[in-house]
Length: 284
Image (tube, rainbow, N blue to C red; front, side, top):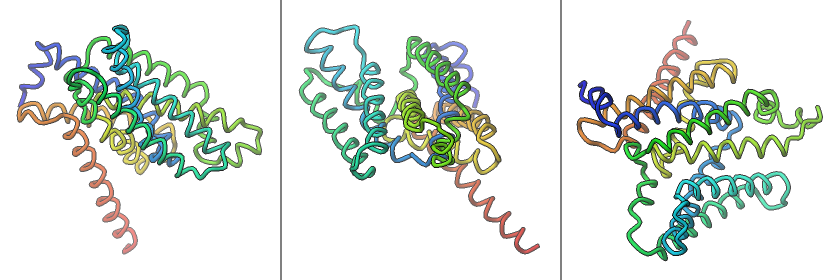
């Protein structure tokens, strides 16, 4: 029962994993609350799958051109931000249907990533781990990068919270008040892109949307304001991440999958509890 906590005290890998689990919870809770409020989970999913293109391109550049300073995460951040800006521009400026653009970006991003992986010499095991995530492989450099990005995300949210909240809840009213909706929507998508890459290190590209949305969705059912939703979502995400690490450690299960299953159980529990309480209130 206590093997994981003993490992955290003596193992650098376990300690880094625990620190990263807490680190990503900040971005997950803050940005996830925006994503759920704005109802753009489908956009976040498209961004997540475009990560593979950036990772594949970065790995190709390292193996073929010798750009050893480049890492898959550099490519992931670049591809995610580019995808977010393209989708944001298409949603607000282009005449094309938004769902069509999102589907195209999603598919093209995955296809480009697969082609780069196929043409890169050597076995790409390190890239494949990002599909399902492996938090036990994070390095101290990843932790410092995540800390810096958390500071950026929290700082931007603190500075522009009223504007971002307006864009999430009442875009038309924001336009009437003279708010530059396009700018703040693009900013929100960039924050989402950054967070998606951070979470991919924990649970992988395939399951990143669940971790981004489940804590915020649970918190949103229990609170009445966006600020309180963010605070509770951060705490919930931290509990899910650390709890998933703890539960998965002894049976040697994939931590990302356990985290998502734990989050799904909590979300399902809130739905069931809310339904039972609602029926009891109706009876009274």
